[in-house]
Amino acid sequence: MNNKVEVHPATEQEGGGYWVIVCINVGSYFKHMQHTKVHCSDEQALATVVANAFNNKICPECGHIFSTHGWDGIDAHWRANHEQIISYENAWKLISTNKYIEVMLASAE
Image (cartoon, rainbow, N blue to C red; front, side):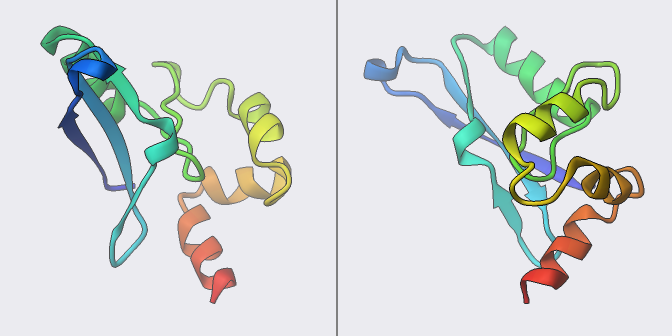
């Protein structure tokens, strides 16, 4: 997946710092994962979150950034958050072959 991140300044009411939003490439545009945005209070935290977004696996449905251990935890994450969309077993077949977004976009048309 070719993903990107957007960094926006946080207001004083939000505690200052920055908001990081993961954007997933869905072909002709980037899907903003607004509901999983991450607040960073300083530039060091910002650098860590941005590096994690580029170096770690990202849930193609919600933008959750997984740990440094590849897809560890995807099964529990998927069952808790996305099972109503598609079963974990079927989703994993697509995710593990990098076909999830392509197939889900085609089925939505």
